[in-house]
Length: 497
Image (cartoon, rainbow, N blue to C red; front, top):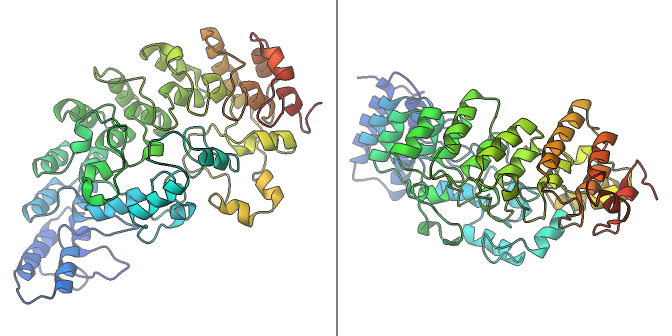
């Protein structure tokens, strides 16, 4: 029998628990010794309640809370050590790999309408769900998937949000040492271990949310975490994790053998609840051959709803594809989707495919020296969830910045020739389709020409292409946005009258 040392048993605050460290070791002798010691300690009858809670925290089911969200099961799964997982499960470890309290704390950080200070509270537990939901109610958010409220739309006008989510992207400002809270099944899917995944499922790991076609309209957010299961509280799913890691055999196993839905939108993350298809396009590395294979498998699944949009912002997979400025990807995807380009329609913000193609990548790309542009354009095309338009979360940037910093928050980054060409090629694909109305306006009253006119180093060829569309010249000269500005007036460093 392995002889435990003081270092083996060290559980000082800056250390993982002994079980978490041992679970990641290929040699399971240390883990076995810890399990024997823990079983003997648990049999003692003279412990106080505090001592028993401490013993549980340091045991095979113990979870290191924020900012780690680690457990022995997660540790062994990350290390792809099925033998260690088997030992832990035999000792009574929680097959979910995380408890309701900790995954509930993490998912609170994804609640729509949360106070902006919740986005930087990354080293301590979040406020209770009821408190965060009460903040949301004050913004007019009666339930988590209700239509965008006036206050939410007003808030967008004071920042530079992405077209597909709210100004403060969930998890965007959490410190780098904050781990994502994943269940054991999600971790196994990401690791590509079919053996561990099946082992956890056989041990009773909760996967109820992922087994069915869940409509976000049918199950409103409830206040108490106790009313939820672990899978419903997760902000991801095994299918999402398998795709992101390019684990094609795992994805096939999840969809066929396990019967998981190819359409699941993470219920606990309403504003970034991307269905797997959109997730693959928007958030995964499409240059990874494994991700490419997963995408092909997903598109060929008989139960896939290829036209499924994100909740709230109602973004279609083709909107995400257009944002890449990759005409080959866009054309390829449109051929797979029933209805093709015409199925995309508009987002909740009124963005057509042409709007998305015309948006600036980030706030770095707009002509901020032109006050009409700075006032009119505040929407980014980027799919990067970590890009930040301001050093502080909204609306703190308004309180601590000078008026100039608010109006011009970024150093200019003009479009490169390659970026110009990619945008032209994307718009050309849309023009060849022919179903675009250049006169369409979004919630800010902007047409695609408004966005093109306000972008740094915009190609004259691109502008000419869009102005040549039916009604394009009229839009250029006369169409005013919500700020009373036409595309022609926005054109140039200081605008043309």
